[in-house]
Length: 408
Image 1 (spheres, rainbow, N blue to C red):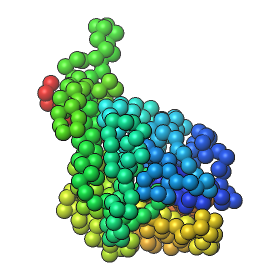
Image 2 (tube, rainbow, N blue to C red):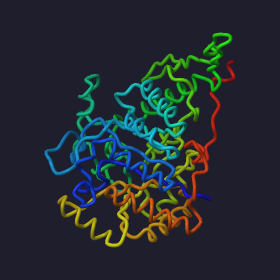
Image 3 (cartoon, helix red, strand yellow):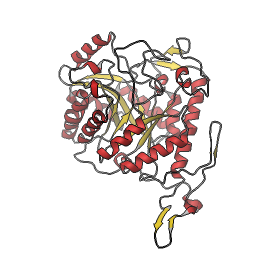
Image 4 (cartoon, rainbow, N blue to C red):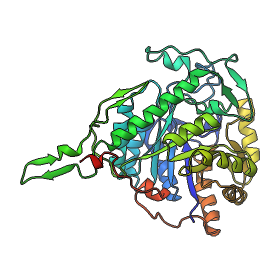
């Protein structure tokens, strides 16, 4: 069986000093050419999909608000718009942008991801993410959130729920948990947002478009449906303005570190990214997730520095940054052969796929697509060619019928 493999793309890589690597191309980070080259490399390696990070605030070393550092990458493209630009340049790899559920209308997210699915021919996904920071709420002025500071962050190495925040799983890497009803309410809102988005994706049936020149009928109006969603956070009439996309339901993915985000993922996602730090830890996480859902596909996240001298390369980046890299996910340094062995150990613990976060781009991405995939292929656990044209097909997920199809 093929091991599922994805990469998480962000800036110059997941180390905050990665842009200072000799092989980095910091002058091109804010260009379509830079991102097109990264995704083309991922597709060349036959990976299932790439995820693209996003947030509503600048990257920061502080819990809430911008910091004063000028030696780390700051700024991002809008992930959904970037994915739409990359879609025509690729043909098989899945594209999974991040889009926040806080301060963002689910109607806008629904049509954006559906449009991406059309443009890519059925390769779109979505990673919903909450935004709990007061400084991000201030961008919109509709709500006020309490500041996140040392009084609201509790060190808890066994629970990394906080990393599900907007931007929190990136270069910050704190093992914190946020207490209180504030974040729980944001996860409940996110759950409703995912439900609204999924209903809007279903609001057009697969054959709602007729396009019959002889009769002059473009659509079958009986196959467009009001979703009539009314909840605590949203009231959405529908239908969507975007016709049913090739996958019907683009793939929904979620990052989760503890019970609350596990519950969120189980309630609306197809794929969950978890962050174990050993095979035994992975086994325990899989058991907990399976208590909530038997259907979720479980991926494990790893920050990776690959190749001979990987540990020394990471140590040099740590010195440039002035601190040792910390992350919500386990950090691996070693050869592709050693990483392949670790992935197979975790696979035996129940992990079905892996989302690797390259420490530095493009160096570690190329080590994944050329070294790691070749090693896995030699062990008979990775594909030699793409076996499906849609992301759902690559992940072994069925094409769902519209929930409203029975109405007509």
